[in-house]
Length: 303
Image 1 (cartoon, one colour):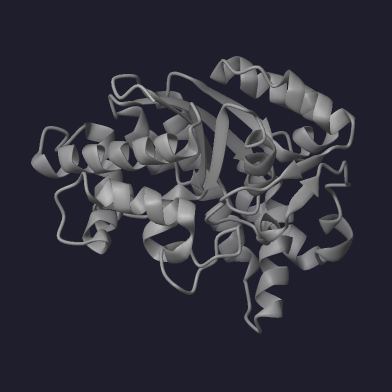
Image 2 (spheres, rainbow, N blue to C red):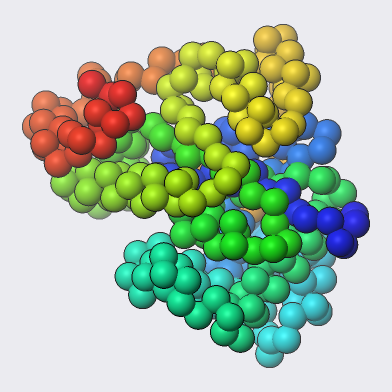
């Protein structure tokens, strides 16, 4: 890959549980795209306990270990952990300090921010070189990371604000919590969904190349949505759309973090109902969510 050419990153921002892993896998089947998953989280998952979709622990995965070793040789850090820590210091999505600094452009000429930019660029360049793909998909979803990537002169950012009905997100969170014998209060899920999407709206206004996608629209009409993303990202998704129409399998490569479906060998695109939460989420939770997030639901055309 040309080291002087910008790295094109197709970045998905918004709330978790919005279908980004499915899109990551499907788009990763394009011959020029590598879908690595939630790249921001590499610092938390690069250990012997977290598994790549290839079924190897990430530190023993041939692909990711090569990427990380290559990256760490190009940055001035004592160890890998300190290298990844630089990311969190800039990208802390719930850090008021980080948002204020990014919004007002504070510290963009400081050594710390320059080191962050270099670290991020070198990591993405290593992923690009080892995958031999021109375009990288990053489904980290953190809007502040998207803003930081937009500020990076080495990155050609193409941002997708991915939204799913917050009540469906709430149901998904509650279901996972129940399996783990935990509780997930509806008010907390509602506040998180509304806040993260407002943050993403703000960042979307700052990014040159961006689009808004509703997960429900993708499931209902994948061809239309993929063409929308392709027009924004300047990528032809005709073959991917044809594969969906033919009900082809979509292979899964080295997805390092995301939904559990990434651990399958292949997946098929399924036009499933996206309103199953309506029967499963109780009336009290629906009412609480609507009261707390009414304006955001309305903004994204959810009733």
